[in-house]
Length: 371
Ligand code: ADP
Ligand code: MG
Image (cartoon, rainbow, N blue to C red; front, side):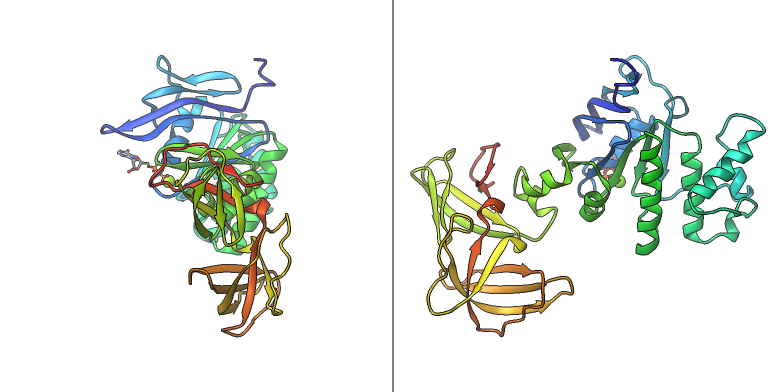
C-alpha cells in the first residue's frame, strides 16, 4: 500500500495476556488520516493496554502494529515509542518543573534555533500566547494541561494516543481544551486513538467508536450506528437508559401489548427482549378510546402515570402499565408533568426498537433491529 493511502495506525490481531488472562484479545483496528477513533468501554476492558501497545510502552503477546503502513512491532521487531512518530497524552501528564512552558514544549523537538519559535507557535495554538516564559508552578491546572498538549502536538506526530487526557479538568475547560486539541490534530492529518469510559465524550468527539468489553471490540462504527444499531442489549445500554419488554416467540413472531414483532431467526418459545430507549416511546393522553395503531408506532398500550419529573432539556415520565404493572420510562423534549394516576397510552417507535434473544437462554449471536 502506498504510504499516503495507508491508515495512520493499524492494529492487527493484537492479543496481550497477563498471567494467563487476556487483557486484549485479537483486536484489529485502523485509524485513518485525520480520523478520531474512540476506544469506549467499562473499566478493565483493555482500553489502556491497547493504547500502550500502540505506543510501544507495552509489548503485545501476538499481533502487529503499523504506522503509515510500516510495521513498527510484530513477533520479530519492536520499535521504541520515540521511533514510532506517535504522540502520547495521558491523564497524569507531567511537565518538567524546572523548565519554562516554552522549554517544556521544545524539549522533544529537533532543529536547533527554531525550536523556541515552534514551541511559541504551539503555545499560541492552544491558547497560551505569551506564556512561554512561565514555569509550571505559575500556571493553573488547565494551563499546565494545555502546555502538555502543545508539547504532544509540536513534533507533529502521525498518530496521537490519548488516554482519558481531559478527565482531570472541570467540565467547561475540558470541552474547550478537547475541542481545540482535536481540531488541531484533524487539521494536521494525524490519526487519533482516544480512550474514554464516557459515552457522551465518545459520541461528541469520535468519527468512529470501538466499543470494548472483556478485552474485545464488540462493535465498531460511527456514533449514529452504535446508538441506533447496537449489537446487543449491553451495547445499547452503554448509551442510555433502556426499557425492556419481554415476549415469547410463536410462529416466527412475538406478540406484545405493543403489537407483533417479526422474529424470524428464533425458534418457538424462545424468550426475547424488545429494547427501546425512553425518547422513542410516544405518549398519548387517554381520551377514552385508544389512539389509532399505525405502522410507525404499532399498537398503543395503556398505563397510568407513576411519576413525572422535569429534567431541564426534557421531562421523564414513569408509567405503570395496565397489562403487567411494569414501569416504562418515556422522555419528551418539553415540560410535560401529568399528575400521578393520569391515564395515558404508550406506543413504540418501531424503527427504534431492538429485538434480541434473551442472553441467558440463547447463543444466537446475530440479532437484528426490528424494521
Ligand atoms: P482499561 O483501561 O479498559 O480500564 P486496562 O487495559 O488498564 O483496562 O486493563 C485491562 C486488564 O488487564 C485489567 O484486568 C487489568 O487488571 C489487567 N492489566 C493491565 N495491566 C496489567 C499489568 N501490567 N499486569 C497485570 N495485569 C494487567
Ligand atoms: Mg484505562
